[in-house]
Structure formats: structure tokens, C-alpha cells
Length: 166
Image 1 (cartoon, rainbow, N blue to C red):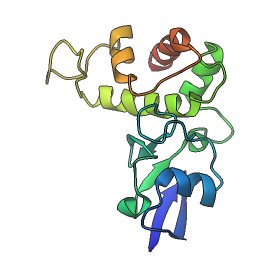
Image 2 (image 1 turned 90 degrees about the horizontal axis):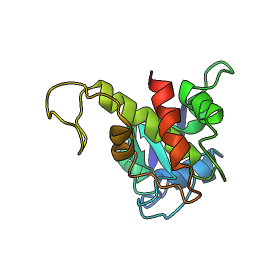
Image 3 (image 1 turned 180 degrees about the horizontal axis):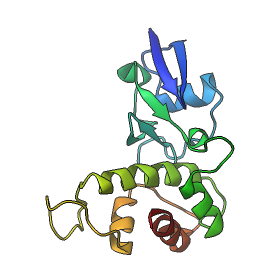
């Protein structure tokens, strides 16, 4: 089936198998290897990308279901040679060790900060429906709970996100 995707600002028309995931299309067809195949079951978040501004596990997203979508991967966050503020904060805070989860963590953080700004509550938000919550360490941990770091860089990930959001 032919689909059209705008990936990191560039439009692509692709013939894809109806069973192909966005992760496989990005990595194998478009050579965008920033998104990682971790668990391949949507449990680790290493494959997190932004689809129309919303974070998603690309290993669970069928490419044909997102025909016409705008996709942003970690490669598309930097602009004009400048790192995205979250990318810079992850470096400044040494918020990665092996780095395998880092692209998914950063894309997820970009998405979750947008969700926070839009007033979406999390499971730990003190006031549901009362607008934007404060960005506490507890909020960051809850909102990032779908992304797992097996190296144990969690301690530095939270300050990196908090610093970038301030």
C-alpha cells in the first residue's frame, strides 16, 4: 500500500507492507536509526517518536494507519545545527549511560512537556482538570514511566527534563 509520511519535515511517499510498523519503516526504509527497537512490545519506550505532536511507541504503530501523518524522530528535534533544549539538557546532566534509551526518552520528554502545557493531568496531578500542573519530580517520573532505562540513568533524567522545562 502506498502511504505518505512527513518525517522530520521531509515528505516521503512509500510502498509499505500493511503489517509494517512505523519503527521498521523509519529504521529500514528511511535509515533513521535514532528510534531503537527495544522490547518490540511497547513496554520499554526506546522507540518513542512524535506522531502529529503526540508521543507514541513506533513499534506498536502500523505505518498504514498513519498515512499523512507528521512524524518527528530524535533526528528531527535539532534545528539549524542547534540541539533541541532537551537534547542539550540530557548532555549537560549526563542523563544517559549506554544511550540506547536516550532517543526515546528525549522524544517522550518533548511530548510530555507539551501534554503538561496543554493541561493534561497525569496519575499524580493534584487537581484534575484545573489546568497545567507544576512540573515536580513526581510529575516527571509519572509522565516518563513508559520509558525504561536499564542502565540506571533515571537520577539524571529527571533533572535534565526539569532544567529544560524551566
